[in-house]
Image (cartoon, rainbow, N blue to C red):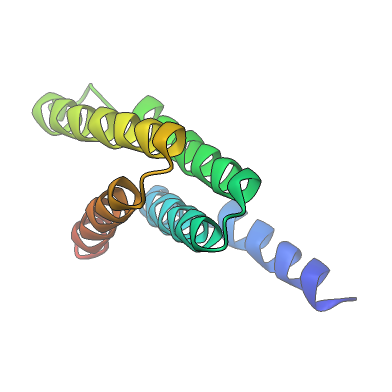
Length: 121
């Protein structure tokens, strides 16, 4: 088995056995990784990779938005997160359209702060 396929199997197992909290952490880590890859691709003027990675990050933020639980007395937290995710998603779209590295950096920092907060729960 090659390193790449072993890595994919490991990641698949990690996702399938993760708790809901761990899944959110994995989503944050994925979004951060894809934003960083987009930044690196922009430095190398690889616009197709910038686009691809920012779309992956947008998809993750969209998944985070759709998975919010507006039930069980968590309405205020879910509403605040939804507003923040909506802002991040819009910034990622604008970063992609304008190839704006500052927007990429800012959204990556926001996602990193959310990751830290979520991991400390």
